[in-house]
Length: 111
Image (cartoon, rainbow, N blue to C red; front, side, top):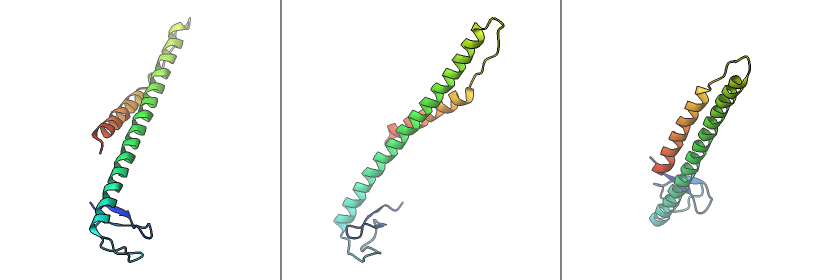
């Protein structure tokens, strides 16, 4: 996997292996390459953690909506004098729960 970083001169993205910028031909010393690649990796890790948290929160919201719909329609059917049907939103509940687990795994692993 090739890591990229921004050239200190022209700010274009170049490969971590590059000895000079392919856009402005500025020479890149090994220390600059290593520091830029490390900074980019930290930034990428933080971005992935935020995305995992977002996935987890969306999944939680989906599962909560599914539970509210299920409980609401059941309560409405149970309180109706004629009885009635209710809706169990398995799709929202299960898919939302899976998204919570997926987001948590990504967030906890820190990758």
